[in-house]
Length: 248
Image (cartoon, rainbow, N blue to C red; front, side, top):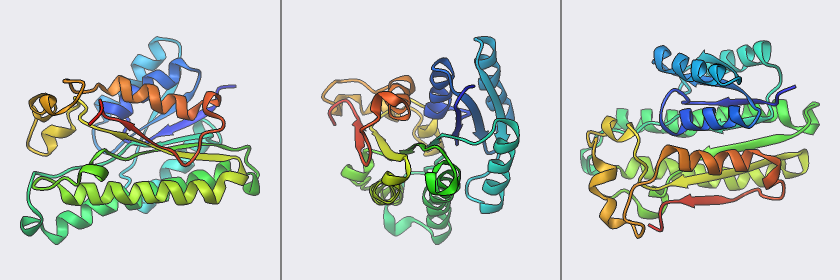
């Protein structure tokens, strides 16, 4: 029986790469998406074509009711999860703090923080030995921006990801004795299309000269770390914040 993994924001970028690699490593994968059903179904098809097990599930993680529905659907179609990757997240157009709106901040925090908290809560309710589960692993997507600050571009995004770091540390301590490990990866400049939504589609390549390794990373390189943290190979690893940033 395949262990069950839910990946939010899995229709593109790091989430999609993680879904593909996790399926290759024996996970049955629930591929969450907010609006792009075609992209999510393409990920599912690629997994199934290589002998894996997956299905697509729609939910906006900025809405608690949709999160609850998503988990119920995963329960019904795949069974109790033992892995969660909180990959869904948003950026906004680059702007200094004095040009940012309340509405922007609210969206940023609702999706990047509240969505991750709510998904982790539902995962714990299914994984925890105190709730009849058999344990599991949660991996949160943070960012190197928590160390760099995002000045002049997206301090709000860096702030949200800083909260994810704190949440990872606290939750890891809280559920360590309940069979659940909680870690975060902090990608640096990764060449995915999330930069386009911030108005800078070439950002990763344009800033490659700032990275000691002199190149942007790939979604697949981040996925390798995530899948390791999900696996039994990292059985004594919890509360870790893993930088995947080429030395930046």
